[in-house]
Image (cartoon, rainbow, N blue to C red; front, side, top):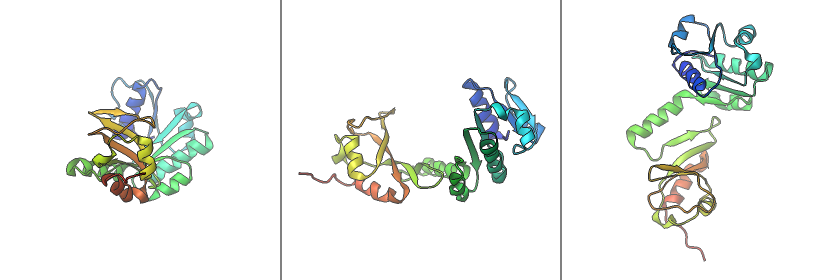
Length: 216
Protein backbone atom coordinates (compact mmCIF):
# COMPACT_ATOMS: atom_id res chain seq x y z
CA UNK A 1 0.00 0.00 0.00
CA UNK A 2 1.41 3.33 -1.11
CA UNK A 3 3.09 4.10 -4.42
CA UNK A 4 5.33 6.97 -3.38
CA UNK A 5 9.05 6.77 -3.97
CA UNK A 6 9.53 4.10 -1.30
CA UNK A 7 6.51 2.07 -2.40
CA UNK A 8 7.45 2.13 -6.08
CA UNK A 9 11.06 1.20 -5.31
CA UNK A 10 9.94 -1.62 -3.00
CA UNK A 11 7.47 -2.97 -5.58
CA UNK A 12 10.13 -3.08 -8.28
CA UNK A 13 12.71 -4.62 -5.94
CA UNK A 14 10.33 -7.41 -4.92
CA UNK A 15 9.38 -8.04 -8.55
CA UNK A 16 13.07 -8.40 -9.47
CA UNK A 17 13.28 -11.10 -6.81
CA UNK A 18 10.64 -13.10 -8.65
CA UNK A 19 7.51 -12.10 -6.74
CA UNK A 20 4.18 -11.03 -8.19
CA UNK A 21 3.44 -7.59 -6.76
CA UNK A 22 0.14 -5.75 -6.37
CA UNK A 23 0.28 -2.02 -5.57
CA UNK A 24 -2.51 0.05 -3.99
CA UNK A 25 -2.74 3.84 -3.98
CA UNK A 26 -5.64 6.26 -3.72
CA UNK A 27 -4.06 8.53 -6.37
CA UNK A 28 -3.97 6.97 -9.85
CA UNK A 29 -1.20 9.38 -10.85
CA UNK A 30 1.09 7.74 -8.26
CA UNK A 31 1.45 4.64 -10.43
CA UNK A 32 3.47 6.71 -12.90
CA UNK A 33 6.39 6.20 -10.49
CA UNK A 34 6.50 2.53 -11.45
CA UNK A 35 8.88 1.60 -14.23
CA UNK A 36 7.30 0.97 -17.66
CA UNK A 37 8.36 -2.67 -17.47
CA UNK A 38 6.58 -3.24 -14.11
CA UNK A 39 4.45 -6.35 -14.67
CA UNK A 40 2.46 -6.33 -11.42
CA UNK A 41 -1.07 -5.09 -10.84
CA UNK A 42 -2.30 -1.71 -9.59
CA UNK A 43 -5.46 -0.93 -7.63
CA UNK A 44 -6.92 2.50 -6.93
CA UNK A 45 -8.35 3.02 -3.45
CA UNK A 46 -7.66 3.30 0.26
CA UNK A 47 -5.33 0.55 1.34
CA UNK A 48 -7.12 -0.16 4.61
CA UNK A 49 -10.50 -0.67 2.89
CA UNK A 50 -11.34 -4.37 2.88
CA UNK A 51 -12.98 -4.33 -0.55
CA UNK A 52 -9.96 -2.56 -2.03
CA UNK A 53 -7.62 -5.09 -0.44
CA UNK A 54 -9.66 -7.97 -1.84
CA UNK A 55 -9.57 -6.45 -5.35
CA UNK A 56 -5.80 -6.13 -4.99
CA UNK A 57 -5.47 -9.83 -4.15
CA UNK A 58 -4.93 -9.76 -0.37
CA UNK A 59 -6.67 -13.13 0.05
CA UNK A 60 -3.78 -14.91 -1.69
CA UNK A 61 -0.97 -12.61 -0.54
CA UNK A 62 2.08 -13.97 1.24
CA UNK A 63 3.19 -10.55 2.51
CA UNK A 64 1.93 -6.98 2.90
CA UNK A 65 3.84 -3.70 3.26
CA UNK A 66 2.11 -0.47 4.28
CA UNK A 67 4.34 2.37 3.06
CA UNK A 68 1.99 5.30 2.50
CA UNK A 69 2.76 8.76 3.89
CA UNK A 70 0.36 8.39 6.84
CA UNK A 71 1.25 6.54 10.05
CA UNK A 72 -2.39 5.89 10.98
CA UNK A 73 -3.27 4.58 7.52
CA UNK A 74 -0.24 2.30 7.55
CA UNK A 75 -0.90 0.74 10.93
CA UNK A 76 -4.65 0.29 10.26
CA UNK A 77 -3.95 -1.34 6.89
CA UNK A 78 -1.27 -3.56 8.43
CA UNK A 79 -3.65 -4.70 11.16
CA UNK A 80 -6.41 -5.46 8.67
CA UNK A 81 -3.98 -7.48 6.55
CA UNK A 82 -2.78 -9.43 9.60
CA UNK A 83 -5.96 -9.81 11.65
CA UNK A 84 -8.68 -9.97 8.99
CA UNK A 85 -6.93 -11.71 6.11
CA UNK A 86 -4.30 -13.70 8.03
CA UNK A 87 -1.25 -12.42 6.11
CA UNK A 88 1.75 -13.62 8.12
CA UNK A 89 4.45 -11.24 6.86
CA UNK A 90 3.33 -7.67 7.48
CA UNK A 91 5.41 -4.53 7.96
CA UNK A 92 4.42 -0.87 8.38
CA UNK A 93 6.39 2.29 7.71
CA UNK A 94 6.09 4.98 10.41
CA UNK A 95 7.41 8.49 10.85
CA UNK A 96 6.65 8.83 14.58
CA UNK A 97 9.21 6.55 16.25
CA UNK A 98 7.43 7.05 19.57
CA UNK A 99 4.67 4.77 18.33
CA UNK A 100 7.03 1.91 17.57
CA UNK A 101 6.56 0.21 20.94
CA UNK A 102 2.79 0.32 20.58
CA UNK A 103 2.95 -1.28 17.15
CA UNK A 104 5.45 -3.87 18.34
CA UNK A 105 3.01 -4.97 21.06
CA UNK A 106 0.43 -5.46 18.30
CA UNK A 107 2.86 -7.77 16.53
CA UNK A 108 3.44 -5.42 13.59
CA UNK A 109 7.11 -4.90 12.63
CA UNK A 110 7.76 -1.26 11.77
CA UNK A 111 10.36 0.80 9.95
CA UNK A 112 10.80 4.20 11.62
CA UNK A 113 11.86 6.24 8.61
CA UNK A 114 13.07 9.52 10.08
CA UNK A 115 15.22 8.27 13.01
CA UNK A 116 16.89 5.61 10.84
CA UNK A 117 17.65 8.03 8.02
CA UNK A 118 18.91 10.70 10.41
CA UNK A 119 21.26 8.34 12.23
CA UNK A 120 22.75 7.05 8.99
CA UNK A 121 23.33 10.59 7.67
CA UNK A 122 24.97 11.63 10.95
CA UNK A 123 27.23 8.58 10.86
CA UNK A 124 28.34 9.25 7.28
CA UNK A 125 28.76 13.02 7.58
CA UNK A 126 30.45 13.08 10.97
CA UNK A 127 32.42 9.82 10.75
CA UNK A 128 30.74 8.94 14.03
CA UNK A 129 31.90 5.54 15.28
CA UNK A 130 29.44 5.89 18.16
CA UNK A 131 26.44 5.93 15.82
CA UNK A 132 23.90 3.12 15.97
CA UNK A 133 23.91 1.09 12.75
CA UNK A 134 20.46 -0.38 13.45
CA UNK A 135 17.89 -0.23 16.26
CA UNK A 136 14.90 -2.51 16.70
CA UNK A 137 11.47 -0.81 16.68
CA UNK A 138 11.08 -1.04 20.47
CA UNK A 139 14.39 0.75 21.02
CA UNK A 140 15.74 -2.03 23.24
CA UNK A 141 18.43 -3.60 21.00
CA UNK A 142 21.13 -1.83 18.97
CA UNK A 143 23.59 -2.98 16.34
CA UNK A 144 26.80 -0.99 16.76
CA UNK A 145 30.40 -0.88 15.59
CA UNK A 146 33.01 -1.23 18.33
CA UNK A 147 36.47 0.24 18.71
CA UNK A 148 38.56 -2.69 19.99
CA UNK A 149 41.68 -2.41 22.15
CA UNK A 150 44.60 -4.34 20.63
CA UNK A 151 44.71 -6.63 23.66
CA UNK A 152 41.53 -8.32 22.35
CA UNK A 153 43.28 -9.47 19.16
CA UNK A 154 43.36 -13.28 19.08
CA UNK A 155 40.33 -13.59 21.38
CA UNK A 156 37.49 -15.74 20.06
CA UNK A 157 34.22 -13.95 19.38
CA UNK A 158 32.53 -16.27 21.90
CA UNK A 159 34.96 -15.26 24.64
CA UNK A 160 34.77 -11.60 23.63
CA UNK A 161 30.99 -11.68 23.88
CA UNK A 162 31.11 -13.49 27.22
CA UNK A 163 33.51 -10.96 28.76
CA UNK A 164 31.87 -7.80 27.39
CA UNK A 165 28.21 -8.80 27.51
CA UNK A 166 27.46 -8.38 23.80
CA UNK A 167 26.81 -10.67 20.83
CA UNK A 168 29.17 -10.43 17.84
CA UNK A 169 26.99 -10.32 14.71
CA UNK A 170 29.64 -9.98 12.02
CA UNK A 171 33.19 -8.84 11.31
CA UNK A 172 34.36 -6.62 8.49
CA UNK A 173 37.76 -8.04 7.57
CA UNK A 174 39.66 -6.18 4.84
CA UNK A 175 36.40 -4.95 3.34
CA UNK A 176 34.74 -8.36 3.45
CA UNK A 177 31.87 -9.22 5.82
CA UNK A 178 32.35 -12.43 7.82
CA UNK A 179 29.72 -14.25 9.85
CA UNK A 180 31.88 -15.65 12.63
CA UNK A 181 31.67 -18.99 14.35
CA UNK A 182 32.09 -19.01 18.14
CA UNK A 183 35.76 -19.99 17.79
CA UNK A 184 36.57 -17.32 15.17
CA UNK A 185 39.38 -15.13 16.52
CA UNK A 186 39.37 -11.35 16.25
CA UNK A 187 42.24 -10.21 14.03
CA UNK A 188 44.16 -6.95 13.77
CA UNK A 189 42.16 -4.27 11.91
CA UNK A 190 38.89 -6.22 12.10
CA UNK A 191 35.83 -3.97 12.34
CA UNK A 192 33.52 -5.61 14.88
CA UNK A 193 29.74 -5.23 14.80
CA UNK A 194 27.79 -6.38 17.83
CA UNK A 195 24.22 -6.53 19.10
CA UNK A 196 23.72 -4.98 22.53
CA UNK A 197 20.93 -3.94 24.85
CA UNK A 198 20.46 -0.23 24.27
CA UNK A 199 20.91 0.56 27.96
CA UNK A 200 24.26 -1.26 27.99
CA UNK A 201 25.67 0.33 24.84
CA UNK A 202 28.10 2.79 26.42
CA UNK A 203 29.32 0.30 29.03
CA UNK A 204 30.14 -2.25 26.34
CA UNK A 205 31.92 0.40 24.24
CA UNK A 206 34.11 1.20 27.23
CA UNK A 207 34.89 -2.47 27.94
CA UNK A 208 35.84 -3.14 24.32
CA UNK A 209 38.06 -0.05 24.09
CA UNK A 210 39.90 -0.89 27.33
CA UNK A 211 42.68 -3.50 27.74
CA UNK A 212 41.33 -6.98 28.23
CA UNK A 213 41.34 -7.98 31.92
CA UNK A 214 44.06 -10.45 32.87
CA UNK A 215 42.69 -13.87 33.77
CA UNK A 216 44.45 -16.55 35.80
